[in-house]
Length: 154
Ligand code: GTP
Ligand code: MG
Image (tube, rainbow, N blue to C red):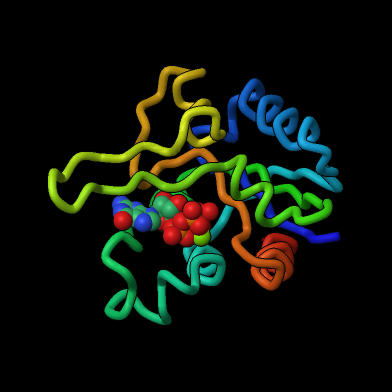
C-alpha cells in the first residue's frame, strides 16, 4: 500500500461539486480517502511544500515559482490522505500533466482528455491555466510522506 497527498488547489477547493467529483474519481478507482480537510498555506509552508521549485531562496527559485506561491497561498485548499496499491502512479494518471508549451510552435498542450486537470475546468467554466491548475498529487512515496507531514502542521 502507498500513501499519497492529494490537494484540490485554490479557485477550485471552494466548489463543493469539484470536491465531490475528485473524491468520486479517486474512490471509483478503488482508492481509499483516509481524511480530507480545508486548510491554507502560508508563504513559508508553500516554500516547504514546493521546496524543489523554491530551492531555498527567491534568487535560486525556478522562474515560475513566484506565481505558483501566489496561487497556492491565495485561498483555502482541500488536502486528502489517499491510500491504495500503487496509489502514487495511479493518482498521477487520474490527475494528468501540467500544461506544456510546444517548443517549436509555442502552442500550449493541455492535459489529456478525461484527466481531472482537463475535465474540471470545463465542468465549471474556468480556463485551463498553466499555473492555476486544479489539483496536486505526490510524485513519489517519499514525497507523499513529506507532504502529508507538512499539511499536518498547517
Ligand atoms: P504539482 O502537483 O502542483 O506539484 O504539479 P506537478 O507535480 O504536476 O508539476 P510540477 O511539480 O513540475 O510543478 C508544480 C506546479 O508549478 C504546477 O502544478 C504548476 O502550477 C507550476 N508549474 C510547473 N511548470 C510550470 C511552468 O513551466 N510554467 C508555469 N507558469 N507554471 C509551472
Ligand atoms: Mg510536483
